[in-house]
Length: 298
Image (cartoon, rainbow, N blue to C red):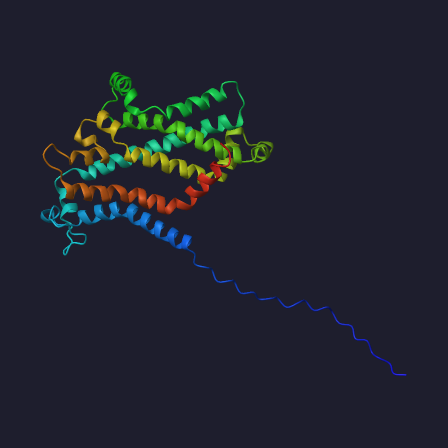
């Protein structure tokens, strides 16, 4: 009688099955989608390209016909003339001061008001939110008469501080609605735990909640900054002296009754666009995160 040894061994794990991804099929719909997106990209970028290339043309060749889509010789004469023949550096500094101050102040006030509207329940809370929404529907020129009269009585016409106050007042409603959505996405437990550990309510807000909401706060500041940076109508009406002009008003000054200085205007437009483009490029990740988080709850 033969004996058979039984060998036991640990079960071997099955070898991973390597599957090849199926090649993506090129469909007519996909091709049309790529063509459509490419055409839309060209349409969107062409004005920016045309402004940039016009700013680099020699002053005597800008109006040449047929149009030169790529000039044979590039020139920085328009940029040199912009700073030598006008106070563009002063205009740039004015816009930077006004937009930065207004953006930071409006964001701070909106942060506090959004916190109150998100965390506290009081009778007129709904009415306040409706009032904030209604202010976004009123065109600025409707309130121009009373606004100018009030600013004149307070001695704030032709002063940067007065323009900052107006921009702050305009920016607060939208920023408050935006930041309120972020507060609603932050659990109350974080704030309650900080208060149990000894923080005051204001301390819990700035030491615990604000760091969590950094993307939303940055997004709100950038929107407030860009709105103040690009605003033209109120800047023209409230700022009279040339030394107090902001960049949009300076750009408007390149248009006269019988002539338009295309070269200087294009050079000024390029320098005006650059700060906002750099800001959006550096903070694009936070802006997308902020807008997505704020869209979860309204």
